[in-house]
Image 1 (tube, rainbow, N blue to C red):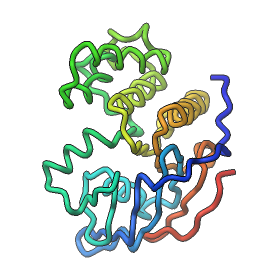
Image 2 (image 1 turned 90 degrees about the horizontal axis):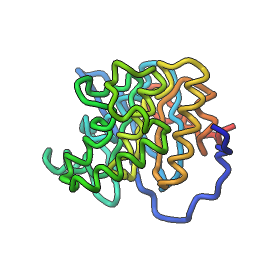
Image 3 (image 1 turned 120 degrees about the vertical axis):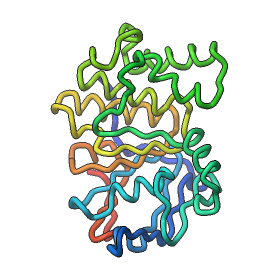
Image 4 (image 1 turned 120 degrees about the horizontal axis):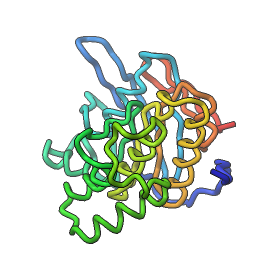
Length: 238
């Protein structure tokens, strides 16, 4: 994919899409998150790095509404997640948050197109609009020719491209990516990173990406360094 993915673009001076303030989380008396705070603007890409067990995935789960923080606050689009009921939190996830996983998590009995349109079905988007938006995203990830294929018929790189299209189908404000290149070879990993940068720019979607890879962090504007459940440093991406 021939494109400039330099993170040096100027971000708009707008209110943050995400505000995280002094977030804490414990499991079975073990403190996993300990006062995490940061903001994330529309169209901004931020890498979250740190040793295994430092709380990166737990933080992603709290931001995605999968887990509830024990303390502090998480604000998305002006709404405090801790004030939402379980049903409202599920609706927030469907409408405003997209997630890309290391192991793809495509539904094996659905075709490529059906996987991509699934978030739109959950939002009761009309069939014609689902078709148009789903096929446009498959065009963007260069997989229109695989629309009717099953996930088992795809390569790892193709599956991750489908997963990215699915995560963006409902036009979320926030995209969470957990080691999105961790299960791919270096060439496919680079292609996925370029695709994430391109689509983040085009859709103006905020991206928070957990990664162990300095190569993955290259597409980001900032890098947040975590240790022992808190952010200990912030650096510009190289």
